[in-house]
Length: 213
Image: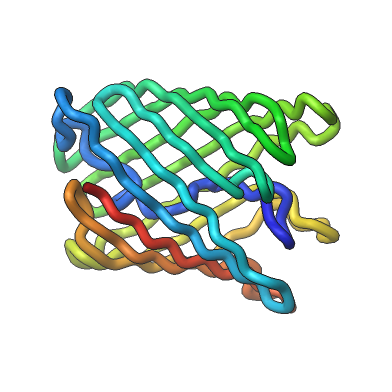
């Protein structure tokens, strides 16, 4: 997905579920709710890069546009439909998605997002399988998951796991800590920090700014 990853999933775009997701009944069903995210990646010894993402939600529909996410100079557009269970404090949302990729990578990507919360414990999963039209050997399963605990309403800590392709590295799975703070919800904002491969000589760092309107 960048100068040192191709591609990076997470997608995950990254972002804690407190910012990326909301309780099933927290969004008005009659109006589209926009959100904007900016991921800043940096790895020791390399140049950093940015990954912008825009969301539109009107339960149960979800629209998503990304750039530099699956690869540099690659745009992707996704549409998803959510199935939600539970209430405001304890809930589970499953959102199957399908997307198209255009640019350095051209293809399709079925995926799944999972957003779950039990009291102060939150789990987030974003996964997709990219079918590359140009080179089927580049087909790959990318995934990003997070598990974290809300210490306070505005502060959460936990860990993140990502599976990706790293250029000139045999490592495909990275695990690391994360911390975030802000005002989750709609409207709201958050700032989160991640670290991967801390035991390697070239650890990877991510900062994510999220704004929901």
